[in-house]
Image 1 (cartoon, rainbow, N blue to C red):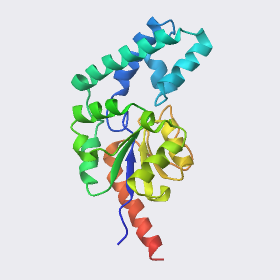
Image 2: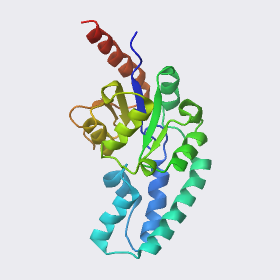
Image 3: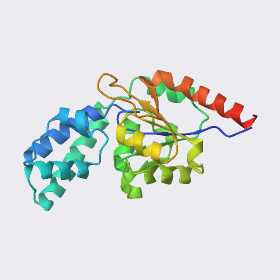
Image 4: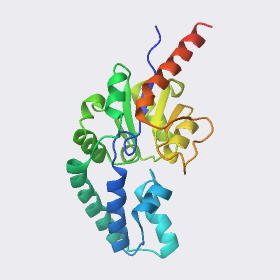
Length: 227
């Protein structure tokens, strides 16, 4: 019998509803540093992007900020965010139920965020036990979405070839990176009115749909293996 597909989940916006908190903290911190930024800018233009990529783009538009000041700003922002994640964070609607329905599948988390932020988020929402230490941070791998190397790194450590992995990600940077890595991609598109799912990805609008889609993928895989 063939092994189950390996499921690689994004964290922010896919498993946990952390993006509004992150956008709020970025807004206050970046604006204080002289880089005008609103929470809606993150949700509209930069969702899922690396923090330093966002800073670089804002500096291009508004002028440079002293690097030491940026380092201090980032440390303060992340400390504030971690405190809020621990006390305010909730799971994405349907994520807990989807993970329970998919129990038995090998699963990991692949995120552009730091590992301590991933752990804080999963612990705060009761999802940590599902993934254990199978957490793959861009900061640890030194490779950020949309570069496909982060997904390939995670697949390798999980012991799977890219073609045996399914990535579930809400952000376009993750969807595009996983497609480039040669993986099957499910786009959790929670904003279908304003966001288009890239060609080659499977769109779902909520996490309750995920187990059915995974079941169809594994059924098709089993048929192909016996063809």
